[in-house]
Length: 347
Image 1: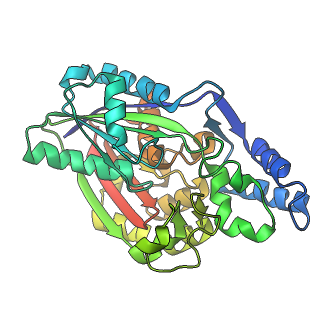
Image 2: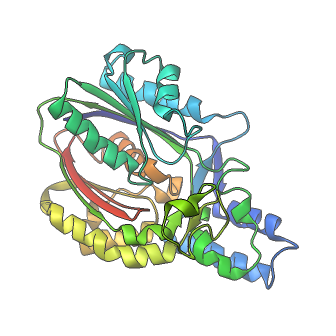
Image 3: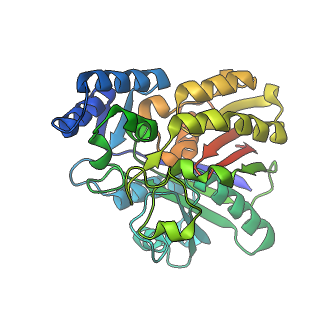
């Protein structure tokens, strides 16, 4: 399997850490119990400590499907692939407008992919990595020759799972399961893969379903589909809840374990791409793994763009000449679920 092209499209509204704390202050005024200014100072300090600086959100009049279309057309043009050559379209990630049918069908219609097979893969921030592995399997076992993987991680619309609910704080203790919401950015990406002879991709995964309650967006009736946990729906049904500090703390060992299973030749790796949950956390882990010099961050400028994190980083590295054809790259992801993945490919 060959990665032919990756493209990322960002919305136009740049949001700084100061904008985030201003929004929290605006929505929390009159509701917060305690010293709100002190709480806002702590939030700002955490964002700076994690490596956050800016992220991009949709502006008035911008639509996810338009940015998805921009990313997809750019990737197809880079790959020299026409719409009628795409055999399968996989829509990934959390951002979506439909529970039924799969978002892939609406994306395919918008892109003019009239003959593509369509389906979705939903596995939180691991979605893109899972989709790439599935595409490789389809190439090896079926007639497909070209796959397009797309996502539209636009989760900050008013009335959605984050805004404005999580910007209204009542007490400082809420930060334990709310703080990751303030790192989120928005992006669409498109990845073109083809069934060509090349250096084989290697994938390794570890699943820890016992940690599933740590990060969720629940639906009505969710409690009938899971074991009880006081962590679920802590911010309310349909609202993002994430115990970010705990996720990083308990996940570090698994993140390192899955990379050891992959066992990449570290001296040959030209670029490392990770989930964009914290620049500081991933830089520390990369340093410990001997890959700190080649990690390519997007968190500081894009924020946590969920399942778009790795493809956005690849697109950025290729554009900047940090990854060139023939060079070895490593992907390294930790995700709600919890799941942990590592993979290698040659551009």
